Length: 233
Image 1 (spheres, one colour):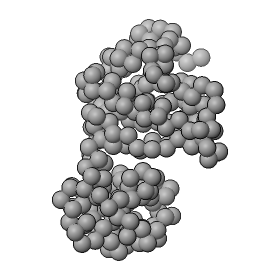
Image 2 (spheres, one colour; image 1 turned 120 degrees about the vertical axis):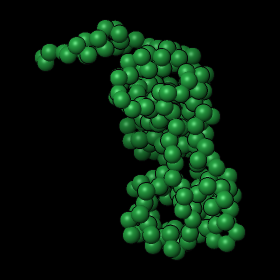
Image 3 (tube, helix red, strand yellow; image 1 turned 45 degrees about the vertical axis):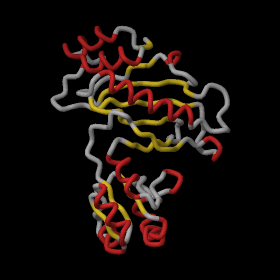
């Protein structure tokens, strides 16, 4: 077995039993205390759910607005014409267009975190399915990214709204903000995110739904959260 460095030994001493369950606020405080990176790390959450997303009635997917924001700059592209294009630009979209935006994306310019479209533009957007789909950027009416209300959609994207989607192994990952946020803001974001997951429980889920929750920082260890304090988990 490789010898532990002094840093690893100190970390192990602070963590103690790696099976320990932590209240959310205690985990946030400990992760901040353990943070040694020279950048503002992200607080990350992973939920292990009692679902098998290979079955349509066990898919967990949706949008949630984090009240304290994400701490990230979100780049938004909007497919719209005329007045709707003007509305999207006024709301703060980074790029607005129609066929010209499609051609720009086909040329490889896909540096966006969210793509929004008005319903009449889906004929154009549909041609980008093979580019946007694998990146999780394809506009979807169920997620509110195909909408005539582009102003609200852009503001939501810029203001802390994130998408969640369960992976094949039944796990959902997300970033909940930066460790420079206050404990209260990170806890508020955590509560909003987990509440959205609980409310999105699919009809096909049987038995325990939220099986495990882990909090970590970008460069830190994973801490298991005590789910008994979470309603509906």
